[in-house]
Image (tube, rainbow, N blue to C red; front, side):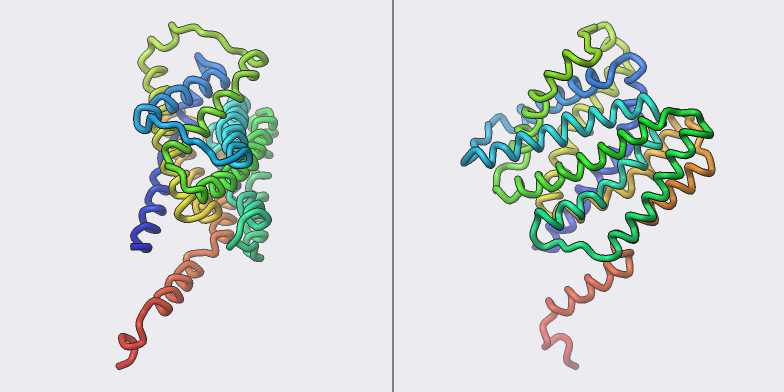
Length: 315
């Protein structure tokens, strides 16, 4: 039963990342008619209303500290992360953002080491992190010098990955509280939308409804709201509760591959050889951080040895 639950957790994380890997493309398309804050607000309103229909119950926490976890989860996972990510997309390629945000597992591992039980940092995390950083440097160099892009977008993507790591750790703590996953996700959305209000007065925001009349805009907003927000946040938060913050976040290594391929096919973005080397180094670093497939197999064999009765081993 436990193995089936773990398998379901891995599947949920994979499907989530598969969808999230293409969200950069939808956001990039919407940025033609919408500002970053407008996309953020509309997608999470759609997501919140969807979850409200699915689970129309408000979660009552047991105290101020529990409620504060939801507040900070909404701030980090909704408001700050996506605002930083969307603004980054206005300065750099969608493929750049997809690759850079993929370093989130490293920051998650570091934060989890100091704030969560059962996960200790090993040498491979630091080795993988250094290799991934080298890849990111190549990506930023490519944008700053060859393509004449503003490196601000790449740096904002790095900050977004740090914020997402904080969110992952917070959701791991929230999952241990035992509340309904859909209800918890909707509560996070609520605080994320609430904390987004001040940004509406500072950033460029208007209520021009005519933009929703075009089919591409409507479909992309629905995709971001229904699939990428409502569905994926629930599946991701559930996976974090099953697998843990660190193991779940490692699935982010798939994002660069999905994003680069999708941005090349849909947006016709040019992927230079420097960007490809940078992406490859980032992926290699993430694989090393994960312990490589060999390390995972060893863990599985050790687990099987512990679970197999001695009577079945003896001949």
